[in-house]
Length: 366
Ligand code: SF4
Image 1 (cartoon, rainbow, N blue to C red):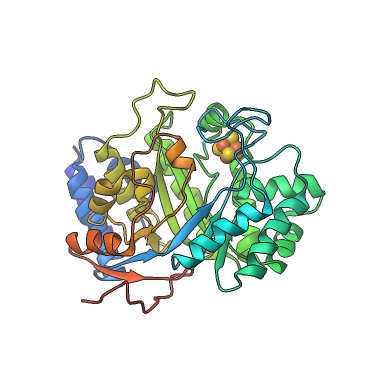
Image 2 (image 1 turned 30 degrees about the vertical axis):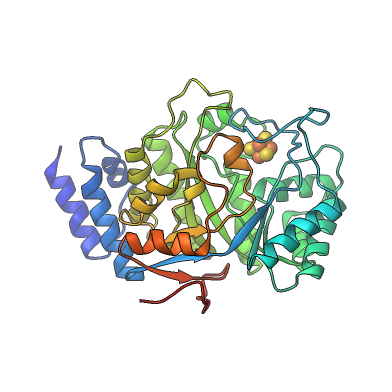
C-alpha cells in the first residue's frame, strides 16, 4: 500500500478538501483497511451531524409489479398475465395508505413497474387520490425511470410531467433506478432501462422545479470499483450544479432470485466500504442512508460508524428488496429503530421527508 497516498487523503479530509476520482479508487483497494476508511468517514459524518442519526416513519406502496422492462437484476417485476402479477385497485391503494397513516407514517414511498396497459392518468390519479385523502402525508413517488416512462406515454417534456405531478401532490422523488451509470454494466443488468444521462436529466429538472430527491447506487453485481467511483463522481457533479439531492442510498445487490443468481453478492465488509467511500466522495450530499432493508439490520447499524447518519425508517410494506431475497424484517417499530441507533452510540432524531426534525413521543432524546 502507498502510505503517502493514504496520508494525502487523510490530510485532504482533515482540511475539508475534495477527493479526486483517483483517490476514491485508492480507497476501494482491498489493501487499504476498510476500518481505517470507515474511521475517516465517521469523522466527516460526525463533523457534519454530530451524534444525531435520523429516521422517518414511512411505508412503501407498490401499486403494481407488472413491468415492461423486466430487468435481469430485478426479482420484483412480472409480465402481465403471470400468476403472481398484481395491480392494486384504487380501494386497495387507499386502504394501504390508511393503514400507514394510522400507524403514524408521515411519508409514503410510492414506486412500482411500468405497466404496459396503464395510461399516464392511472399513475397521476393514484397520486391525486392518496394526496386528497391524506393531505398531510408526504408523497415521495415515482423513480426517474417512471417519470421518463410518463414522458414517453404522454409525449410531454420531463419538466411538464413533473409539474403536472406536483399539482396533484408529488412531494419529492425517490432515488431508485440509478443502478450503476457505467454503460457497459448497465447494458447487462438492465438493458432496457433509461441511460445515466436520462436519469440525471430527470433529477436535474426536478431540482430546478424545487423538488428534492435522493440518489442510489446498486453495487455488488458486475461493476468494478472504477464504475462505482464514476457513479459517485457523476452524482457529485450534478449536486454541485443543483444542490437538490438530500440523501445518498447505497443498495446492496441480492442476486438470489435474479438472472445473476450465480454471483455471490456483496459481503458485509463491501457494504461498509461502499458506505464509507460514498461519505468521503460525496462531500456535497448531506445524508448517507443505511437502508436496513437492503443491508440487513446488523450491517445497517454497523454502518452508523462508517459514515451513515440515517437509518431510513419503519418501512412498512416493502416488497421490492424482500422479493429479491432480503432477510430483513418486514418492518421495524420506532422503538426498535431508536434502540438500534442508541446501541450504536448515536442519538435518534425523527425527521420528516425533508430532514426537518419532528418532536415525537417515539423519539426519546438523550
Ligand atoms: S428494476 Fe424497475 S424498471 Fe426494471 S423490471 Fe424491475 S420494476 Fe421494472
